[in-house]
Figure 1 (tube, one colour):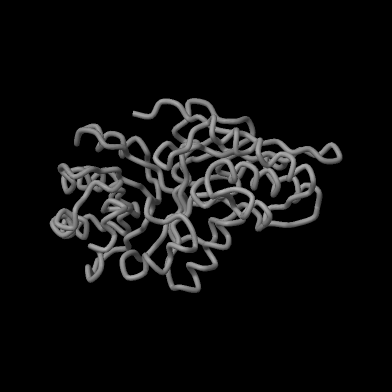
Figure 2 (cartoon, one colour):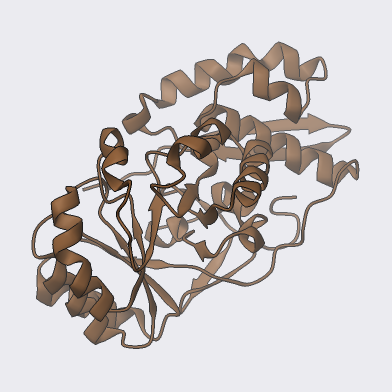
Length: 298
């Protein structure tokens, strides 16, 4: 069980104005805090010499380190008045019920109150029962089921009737990343989103015909700049967008919130899992995220 969120923060200062960004190195993708810090340090000279967000796309690989630098550049540039972003507005976000006993999952869902969107984490065991336990607790909520690569195509076929009965709208990454092709020809009665299988624009053509949506996470794309381009490419390809996150503080979530209007499913509850968040950050109450205080980010 994850008990700590280790993040990398980047600060850029110009004319007394501070731009901040945060990235969450993810071991699943071979990242570490030490590696991310080294990657940030490697571009220090280029950034201090004037490299911009678009230069970063060739200077750094996609990942948490680039996300942190990209976000800091956005924050600085917006505060300096050289660029603008869509205004952050209150946004419905999924809140998550983790894998547990049926009774515990039912109780956790009840404790959420009348949220508009719930995400249910599952593995390959007792899928129908777990989803049903949450549905009974939250009869009106929209529902996402996240299998985290734990199913086979056979499992997906077997649980589909129960997912339909529970009115599940989206299943996230049902199969392992090396099994995407098994989804060819599977006609799902709900949306299926690629998470671990989707990182950048180059993945879209490969995933079409397998997934209806891609889950855009800024720590995967390497920042808001690349995420905006990926959302544009997905729209052109007729692929839907889900907006997700790692377990991060509000500083990591604030840039993603500016992309929320492009997504049909928003899952930005990372700060909700923290015992303590950054002062002035987002608030999540009954599944609605309120933007950070003015000046917190961009």
